[in-house]
Length: 109
Image (cartoon, rainbow, N blue to C red):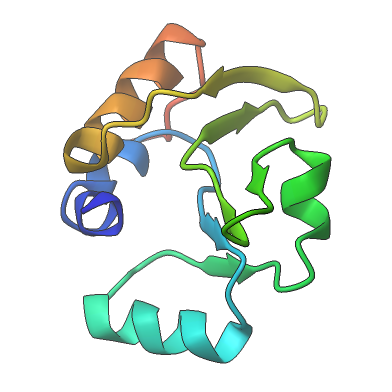
């Protein structure tokens, strides 16, 4: 549902001058197949060794999966906000709302 929201309402995010992507603990091939099956129009990054998930504190080792959190990272690389209560069905809209709240620059028309 979250990936579907990002695909269907990603235009709201693309109004901002930001890069966005999903990340998964799956292999690149699994993520490629998943992205193709959804028609995803954004990158899905792979972290099969779980190092990035561990570094961000989202790894659930008992399942080998990452928690569904959204990180907002500034142009300086600092984390501006973390959403730990992601609602998959409205993920794109929620991200666009948070970007506006954080004062993210909008793309020129």
